[in-house]
Structure formats: C-alpha cells, structure tokens
Image (spheres, rainbow, N blue to C red):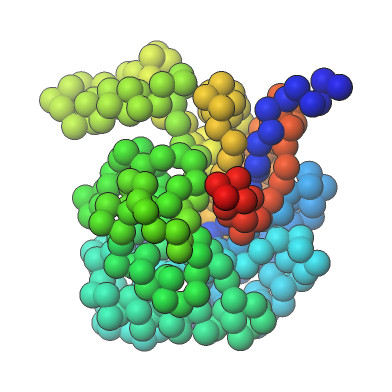
Length: 331
C-alpha cells in the first residue's frame, strides 16, 4: 500500500554514443576512434539489472563502424533500449572544411549544411539499425527553431538539445523548462503552440527547490564583477548555492541524490540522466578525472537510482516512451 502513495516518476538515461578524442585538442576530422563502444555491453547489462532502458544518441562515426553497429543492435534488441540521432558536424558528411570551435556547434552552421548532414545521418541510422530514429540531440548542445523545423521534415518528433540553466557564447538555454515541453520555433526555450516536435531536456537544478531564483543568483555570480572573487566556487564550497546535474560524469552520487530529492519536492515527473559513451573508456577524453571510467559511472548511477526507487514509484522508459506518455497525458 505504501508504494501507491509514492510520487510516480519516469526515469530515462540518454547516452551520447560517439567517437573518443582528447577534448582539449582539435576536433577529429578522419580516422575516428570508437573503441569506447566496446564498453556498451557491460553498461547495458548494468542497466538491464536495474530495469533501465538506455536511449543511445548515435553519431555518424559510430554508425559508420560495423562492429559498433553490431554491439548497439544487440544492446537495444527486444526493446531493451533505443537508437536516437546525434549530430557532430566534424565527423558527419558532407564535409565543408576544417571544423573550428564555431563550426562545431550545429546552430552556427548554414541551415543548408545542417540539412545535408542531417539527411546523411538519418539515412545512415535507418540503414544500419533498420529503424527510423525519433529523437535527436545536437553535439555540444543548443538548438534553433530552424533546426527543429528540419527535424520535423526528416521525421523526428523529439529533440533533446536543451541544457537547462546553461549559457554559451553561441546560445543560451536559460529560462527553459526542465520538464518536457512543446518548444516555440521563434524562441526554443519557451513553450509554443506547435505540436509536431517535443523537447525533452536533461535534468539540471540546484541544491534547493527554487530553481528559477537560484539560477538568477548563479548567473549574477557568474556574470558580475563578483566572479573575480571566485564567488561561484565560494558559494559551492560553502553550500550556499550549488548547481547540480543528473550526470554521473559531472556529479557525485550524493550531488545527484540532492538534485533528485529537490526535483521530487518540486513535483517533477521526468528524471533525465545523461552521459557520453566515451566516458566509459578510462581517461579517453579528459572530461573526467584521470583514471575514471565505466566503474566510476556505474558506481555513481546505482545509489541515485536506488534513492529514487525508495522514494518514488519509478517507471523506466526510453526517451520515445517518455514522449508517448507525455502526449497521452496532454491529450
């Protein structure tokens, strides 16, 4: 009977399934290494034991490697997971010259280049996985209304490129909801009238329940002269204000549990954890600390999932299943 009183939540893990390289160096342009995909079977087995159904956002470099395709086809067979699309401009044909920091962001490319790349990525995924992916995520985050319209044109009905409470010099996700919503093509972080494509952001928040106010203070500390005093770091270490990510690469288990606790208090119903497949390979990208890899990721995920199971009625879904549930709720 106690289980009936628990809040019902949906839990999804999305994995940017991509090539590995040293992220502090230039973007790879050829001879892509996808050794990290060899870690997927163990990760998938771990997820299956928990009852989790990963959504693998696969980029062209991985989809173009037969051994990686075989591993992923096995991983998602029988509904154990899902294949989605992930666009890295530097490894996705057609190519338009050297990729710099600017061109690495999909939203900075001419829309005709995005269309050409998206067409080849979609065709490749359909061919090697014998399925049309429904969900999409840009590499390095960020999305525009024009790209969303392209996604609809190519048969996608889900995007997951919004990174709540994050700003970059090329785009901002500030002000976006942290739950699924129908984005406005004119302003993708706002709710719009269209019903062709659903946005399912990853889960980000703070160490209190007033995420909006916390975000304002966090931005003030980042952007004002106070940042010269390293005020963001001071706020973190004193516990006054901490931004938390439901991401085992960026956050400890205790920090993710803190976020989950506050999301439950807020009544959030979708918990969207995310990571990169390349982080499963020890010391592959420089994103995680040296020596950290799959063992670190799994050690951080398990207590978070167990916390949710203890404190909520958890249903594990792929990202498309979350979208279908949301649409049914909205009907």
